[in-house]
Amino acid sequence: MSHPPGLDLDQLRAHLDRERPGLVGGPLTARLIEGGRSNLTYQVGDGTTRWVVRRPPLGHVLATAHDMKREHRVIAALHTTDVPVPEPVLLCEDDSVLGAPFYVMEFVDGTPYRTAEQLATLGPERTRAAVLGLVDTLVDLHAVDPEAVGLGDFGRPEGFLERQLRRWGKQLDASRNRDLPGIDALQAALGRTLPDSPAPTIVHGDYRLDNVLVRQDPDGVDRIKAILDWEMSTLGDPMTDLGLLVMYSTDLGMTESPVSTTATAPGHPDPAELIERYAARSGRDVSAIAWYTAFAWFKLAVILEGIHYRYTLGQTVGAGFDRIGELVPVFIEHGLTTLKAPQEG
Image 1 (tube, rainbow, N blue to C red):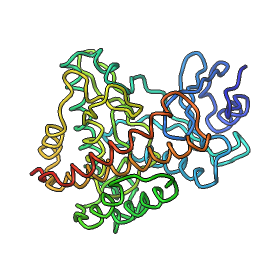
Image 2 (image 1 turned 60 degrees about the vertical axis):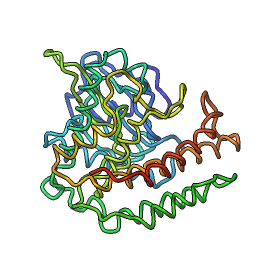
Image 3 (image 1 turned 90 degrees about the vertical axis):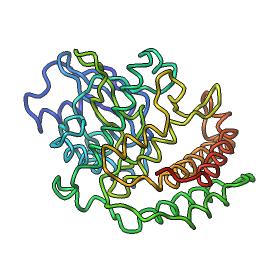
């Protein structure tokens, strides 16, 4: 039995047999699934059924252990609603089993579309339907009453935007090692023009096409079967999710990008249509969307600069990392332009 790094299958099997007798039939096999922001994701099977195991990265700092409980909690709460999430199987907070807390959920068949090339294989009509479905599913998520599903204390919505801006400003300060024209002006402008948040909702925090699984139903329609990667989820301002989705749906005007963007796939709806559809379906006021989109550009610029900083220190190796640095000014420029653009009503 081969064990992928961080997953002792004998220990996992013994734990599952104790907690969920009869769940597992044959011997377990496993493989590491690529993707995900930082936590490790494995596909595990017994020859008949497949599951997914999520755990913090190897050598994780204590703080990320908290993610497992939060992720499992939000999935378990949403599984009772119309929001598509995998069915949770169990949460284990005992470090002695795998060396870190982990949770198990059902395996959902589907594709996370990461690139325009991948999405283009669907053709324009199916691409359009899949991306509009992404908006509709976000509306469904934001329509869930947090109190009704036991998530009333899942975050602190008061002062959410100020805290977010402060948090990403601190992240920026932690990786400053070169002059980045415009980034301080962007941060200051965002701080000066903070919108009033609508009523708080469950916020995914990293909502985009490659964090959902899409599968074609027998009727030929591509539907979202599961939203994944709930690491950043909390209670907060729903417009931050929409702003991020708009940002990821914008053509960067680059032939190659190390950042997931599917915007250039034929049939992909443009940002204005996504905003309009969200407004029509949710009934929410989207007049401040330029601020939220600019904030998404700022946040990604900070994340990318952090990756670039680690790359310059020799802490990050791999294809594409050498080009991350030149992408940061593009994101800053988009942020500044978006903020100055007329607000869409």
